[in-house]
Image 1 (cartoon, rainbow, N blue to C red):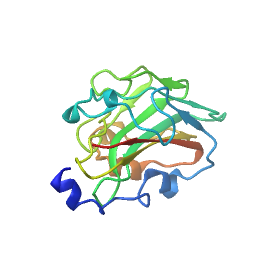
Image 2: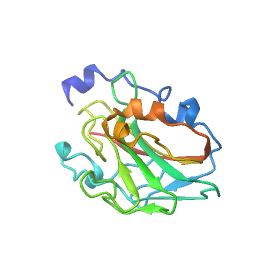
Image 3: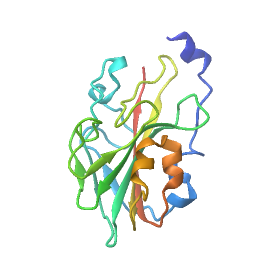
Image 4: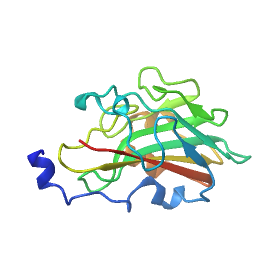
Length: 188
């Protein structure tokens, strides 16, 4: 068991500052979010974990259903609510075209995102950052959140490219027409 993980065992960000709980991102929970790689509440396969921990840092396949009419864009936010930080650690922020209904493995790659996908800064770098919790810290829950927005997610594209994840999330204005989430677990 890792010494640092053991020392930080009881320190967890929690759900309070999760994107899901931001007032501008509230809305009806009517989207169904799924992955062919893992079920809700189940372990995330190692190939989707960070390279530092032996994974490939390949974003998992995702799909969503029940996107309402009037949706202009989708916002995807992946956060670790068990990170030993003051807020959940952001593993990915992406804006996705309305026409896209699923993402293949690796679609959130910073260098080669899928068509219709714009990836932004995560907590470290750009694009998808796979799970890599501190060894011995216990299971970490990774929340994949999808929001159906009625208008463009971001008005100032150049500023959005430079923004830190929390700044970016704070700049998104609703209304949110629908939202859904999927939680995967990873532990070292």
